[in-house]
Amino acid sequence: MNIALKHIALIQTGIFAKPSIEGQIVYLQAKHFDETGILKSSLFPDLKTEDISEKHLLKNGDIIFAAKGMKNFAALYENKNQPAVASTSFFVIRLNEDFQDRILSEYLTWFLNSASSQNYLKSQAVGSSLVSISKSVLDEMEVSIPDMNTQKAILRITHLRRTERKLQQQIDLLREKQIQQQIINALK
Image (cartoon, rainbow, N blue to C red):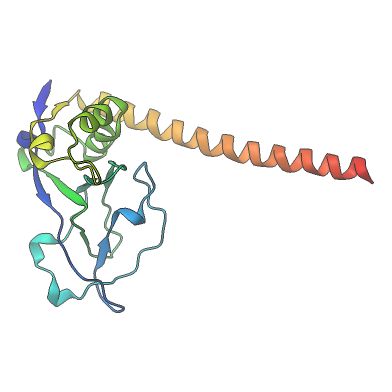
């Protein structure tokens, strides 16, 4: 079944805030993530609670979508006892209650990051110096929703593939060290 994202989820923009040295809330920015949406840096609270409205706080299962610039990834927000808000670089996607039992947030994140979705979104981006994807493009994007078992299988396969890549990188690194050691031993 294909359905427009606007029927599945509420989409709102992140907020503009000025980070401070001390704070109680994390201000998520695109710089905190790699191009695939994996958190690459430690997060520190850098916004004061009194500066943030409750409605902007991210909830477990929210998806943040980087809509500005060349990195247009989706990332799943998982609250690790650290309240956070998204910056204006992101759209916050929150599943509607009537879809929470029909689509997994993890699956929707995977779907938005899939090659076909990324190609579609990049083809709809506007702007020359700072390209961006509009809310209306996200609203109208057709999302394929398979049954729950299929969604879970896709996520398991994706997780296994990610694990395989990490293991392959470790093997390559160890192999390189082994070759370098053999060269050093040969020179002695």
